Length: 516
Image 1 (cartoon, rainbow, N blue to C red):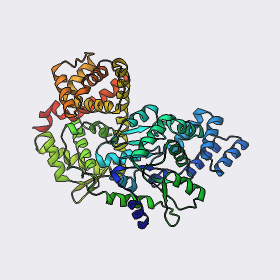
Image 2: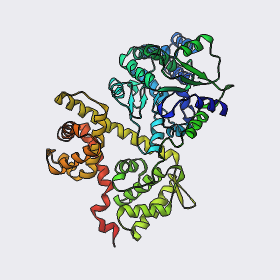
Image 3: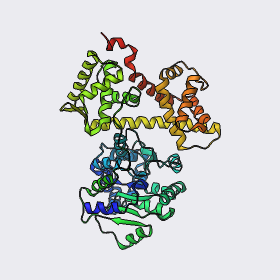
Image 4: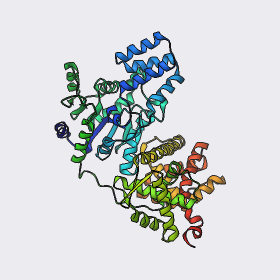
């Protein structure tokens, strides 16, 4: 198997100029199902609904013929949208967890990743490794548009996301519409002409990979040799010729690999070949503002007690430090030092709270403590990352909504970079002006970006980002968001402000906790 990994690595011209396609095989060890097993569950759900025998026989025939996308079309047409959506929810929205292959992938400096999987294992693992979420878009028209103008690292979930069941691509009719979309072809043309492509985790008979071949075939031949790494099986001469015509070369293990071990082994070899191509993660540095995007969700996920705000704050700090430390863990002494540094002093009250909270977290199986080193249990770390991912999507959704209104007013064309700038600035504003923002929202005041505190903060931010030319557009977006927030936008803004207040809650009555 190592020989296979070495051959694949030798055929990759430049990892930073490679886009990786990841299929179902990537997530199977994490609890997801293959196409075949998923369709078997779909049949089981149809049987449970006690459909008539002739209909079930027809479904079974489509399954035996491996005509899975046609099967899903028939289920949709015959059972109706509501029952279809319930089946999809049951089969595809399942508990799963990132695996070692996700960890290896997250540490390889690919130019981007495209996946036909619906799960969120890639985002969760990437967030664990990089302390930020990847720039993620789906097959929705606006998502493809953003990717067309994006030239940094990206994650393209081309068949949708499990959080939006309405959007995910499963049916033959959906595949056919996707293949015919000009914007999808334009996006593929961009990638085929500029990057080398590696396909990993696909059975060459999968509907996903067949749809990809059709899109590639209509978009143009790969400029650099593509690499298909697939399970051991007999590929007929016609398919080999078709793939070679597309400039795609096939690599397979020498025998059937029941555990798909060739995937993590290939990724591990690529990861080790990447050493030196990207910077190591910086040392853990945590201050009050760095807790902003973690505190509220950490408390929501892990805190079922009625602890006072100060102990909740201590808990969020310890959890944040443990998550950032990763598998290496963090010493109890380092926790005390960093919490003391955040709060600006140390005393017996603080140390007692740290001990009390740490004992609570270990007693409840959230942290492990061995040799005075704390580590967060993987499943709880993933729970947090899933919650963080969900909230980040909510923030991005309200920004898209606001930017849509601003683009109409300003008469300008939308870009993905604008939305990223507004998102970053929003977090900066909450960190620096959380109290003022809360007052504007609570008392229906109107924000005026000519006010010195906002104007200077926005100017400094745009200068830092080398985006002074966007000043009027970004100021308009922030003004629109605060002054004309919809109920949903206002709810998300309040969540952000809650994080701000929780992060700095000890300051509301410091004497009660810090002295005495």
